[in-house]
Length: 330
Image (tube, rainbow, N blue to C red; front, side, top):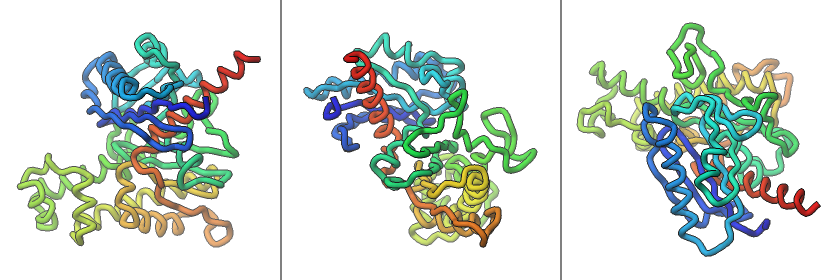
């Protein structure tokens, strides 16, 4: 069974990405759909997941032993129910049961950031590190911890929701219902919001970004800002630097709480590399409690890119399937 394939599904605010993953973490086939708009019913999102799984199962002759779902939301300790998903329409959604009725392979559900962190610990940037924290910068901010080979899920399964730490009292309204959450200042949404604000204000600083979208701010995306920064646009570089500074503030808080040896930064925004990470490292060192008198955790980019979530979901599902098989044999 350890050599069999598993399907990994990564459900984000904008896409449902899937892959067939082997036991070494290699993705051998891929499928993808856009995430249905959040105003639609949970059934529509589940239909999309089933479409991706079905495409992958139909495309291989090899044994597939499990399907792992990495869900963007609060996954209960039973790893079957999505309690709350700010960017989707799930509220106490029995996701495992709903999908298991429609998919002929055992289903395992976990938080998408837990899955990504597991992949980086098993196959990527955190191999060999006993205490790691992962921060995923995408539509929002996800987070996870792997300590001594175990994902720290918390008593109720909801640990690692770092994006909803308050960093600015009374600040930007967050989709979770609160104000001033970290993800309102250090995520892909925050990056695009700030750039569009400059553009709609008619700032001359935004001339290059406006040219890239033919004068239509709503067409601007995070990857466009990253591309502009790489090509030397000072405004795009400054915007990424500001996101990096907020990233460093939050990481310093996490270091005070958990004292890991390594922070791994993943998600789509992390594609900016040192344009994001260097400002984060500088701010982290400045904000770190006890700076100068304690070891400092390293801050590195994720090694597996946007596929970390689906790789980790597949590997966790394979492990669950193996544990069930061994228990049955006993």
